[in-house]
Amino acid sequence: MAKTKKDISKNSGFVSSGTHHWWHLKLASLALLPLSLWVFFNLIHIFTSQMHYSGIKAWIAEPLNAGFLSLFVVVAFYHAAIGGQEVIVDYVSDKNTNRLCMVLYYLANIIGALIGLYAIFNIVLAHS
Amino acid sequence: MSAEPVQNKRPLSPHLQVYKPQITSVSSIFTRFAGVALVAGMFAFVGWLLALSLGWIPFLFFAQLTTNPIVFIMIFGWSWAFWYQIFSGGRHLLWDAGFGFEIEGARLWGHATFTLSFVATALTWVYLWLGAY
Image (cartoon, rainbow over all chains, first blue to last red; front, side):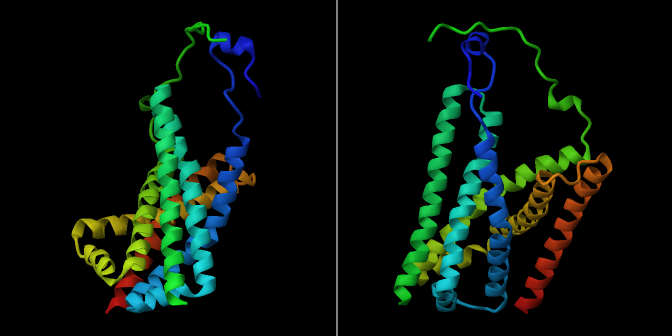
């Protein structure tokens, strides 16, 4: 719902729509439910099977594992960005600080996802 | 457009402190704590992936970090935060689908979220401990 001129003059009313944000948060969490469990159990397997450096890299380099791991990294950071954003919305009340925190937080999550993808890509390349 | 908006003196909502903590509110705020912890955990996870891709020296540095008690406590915390987020997130998805809004159900699921997360964390570490020896 758009802000009307009357809303602006009264300093109230909806700022923007949240449906899109909410829906994406739900889609990401739905995807993360199986993805994160898959990563979690594989990490446990890696640590209990005494797999070491080259073994772990070989596991990551398998196409299916590399694919799901990349998907996990992207969706998890997306979920982190739009979910964690709510904390900034709730607790940083100053408008300018809020915007700055938001930009920095999104940037951090994008960098996180890129680091993850870069690492996986590197491992796959080194193994082929 | 840029005229100063008239600040009207609307009442504030009551501050959080006046409410008695209930399982519904406590389980809600812990979802947020767990989520924030897991964001940090994701950075540690991609850091580990990066170390893995860079070579065995960075990898050993990372592996050796886990012997630090503080890092170990963080990893333990992340394992609980993970399970908590799984059960609490699952609960949220059920709510979104329209289930569990009755007061009794909401209380029950609040308690269940904590209990299940504790049990799953305990099982995880028993399994890890058994597997390591």
